[in-house]
Length: 172
Image 1: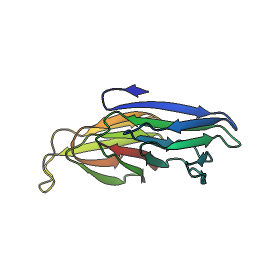
Image 2 (image 1 turned 60 degrees about the horizontal axis):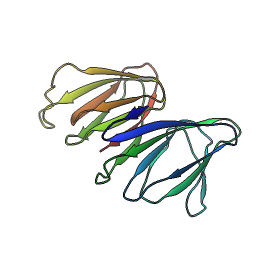
Image 3 (image 1 turned 120 degrees about the vertical axis):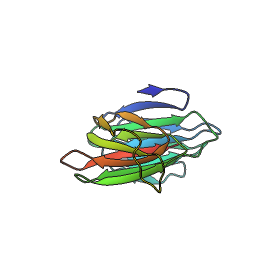
Image 4 (image 1 turned 90 degrees about the vertical axis):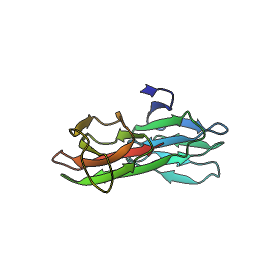
């Protein structure tokens, strides 16, 4: 899906009752995002959890997780951060029709991953206090499971679809 100096992003399709093992390396973090409901997750301590679509978590170094498909197939997105010095901030977000949300990543890039079909207007502001726009808003259209980068800045994301949207943001 994506491989650059910041991250390697890939998709894991779990057939019914299949499993996938995620082992994070020393000094390395990974983020997993569940694209479907009902994936069973067993962590290093043996705790079992069933995921919901749009659920996302950062796993620190030296973690071992096992994901299992349920009664139906499932899909995960895995993001391997390539810069081990960066703490990642992960948020699952939903916006209703015409809903808005500010994203204050003024010093960091943000990776958006769509869980549902997403149509957003992205307005970037020069300064937080003045709310002066910096150019024409960008339209971000993403089918489920696709990615877009937001450059550093103060962003106002507006859902321009006529139905709710769901996405995950990962801030470096």
